[in-house]
Length: 187
Image (tube, rainbow, N blue to C red; front, side):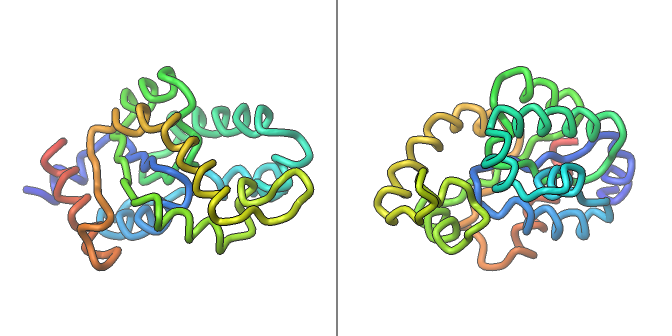
């Protein structure tokens, strides 16, 4: 019965959450668990633009990146069924959230800020890690900026139909199984 419900799902599952919350990691595991295809929106943008996100931000600015992000997301909602890991800032306005909820399930991956700061600090691919001179920010500065940015986006994340709190799980597989169970109850 559960397998039939999942197989008959006609919509995608969009994983949202703050940067470095583990959306891609959970997305891959969940796609495997559901026997769905997986797409990482940030990787799709990098492939189609032939530049890293950091390069896009540096060369063309955030506004250009957000425009492309929306364009590729619209394309996915029309032509793809599976699990999609969104970028941390993909939910920029109510129109995007409403659109995604019409075309699928929105799953919020809720990860503690301390974990996020550590992950961002250890990844040189994150544009927010660097100041205007290209130097790595202090952890304190990074924490303050990330906390502020998160508070601006939180109202959008919390509109997801499903929430997964990462500290409740010891493995990604456990998290994927819990997400599958919640999705099954929702469809």
